[in-house]
Image (cartoon, rainbow, N blue to C red):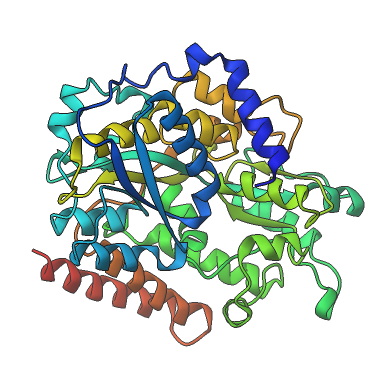
Length: 426
């Protein structure tokens, strides 16, 4: 994050008012203790996390947060190993529902029910979908500090140059593929694809997730629809072949920035990343976002998302201090800073947080309200074995998309393998 952008975020927060800045933090009082918290987070969130930490230490003199940054691709494995080795960790970020369920099932997270009640922690700011995501076996083990909402991003400048109408909210999946076909042009190394379906599960499961399907459901008709749609996009030449995407190892955003595709599926994290890319001269085009398309005959403005958590180590040396910081980091004070930096926080239902996220509309994306306007469903359930089930979907769908297995055979294999995983954890 550039110094100029960092200053702009701080200026925005000052404009909200120093008195308002920390309102909604539960009227926090610093607990007794040595005042130091050892906190772990991955490097993708480093800049904004450090800004929250700085604000926390200013608000509570004598409090100190020592932060350990771990590369995001290694974070889950390193964290689980370090917790098992009793490394000094008081509080940590938790990368998604699968990690949350795994840590809670291993008794590596502290139950927070009593602390939440004792501190009158305001849970309403997390909205209607959060409760099932922070509980395991009925108990609270975390607070969400980030919330992802999926959208379609598109290269606005490229559409203008090609004379093709911009994508819009309320489009069907057929309409978005037709638009993608019009935005597929060129050849060889200079070819631009209209739409990008990546190798991750989220891209072909979008249509299932947005319609309320869960990874534990037995009806695979929506999964089939998503697989068929991705194959159709590849056959039409709209999207790069699955094997080619895998072989190049190119990420979804870098491919978009290099104009390899005109549209791709993404979530709120794109805002901060693309703004940084513009500030650093990586891109030279305007861009925007629209709501996820929908199936014909199904409700529009439906999407899916997830929550990223912060929790306290069950073996924390300073558990009260750790929760005090986690409540701040994942509460409205931290949420305002993440929101002003273009990252959708967990506490996104507070009006000041909405104002920070939307900003003054001087930057892309212009259609930023879509992150609040869509009905967001959370498909994951915090259960043991969730990580393995995700991997099963990835492995079996991979065989479909490279032409080595039929959709029917893949679905049957998913059913069988998923049942084995669930049985192992009963």
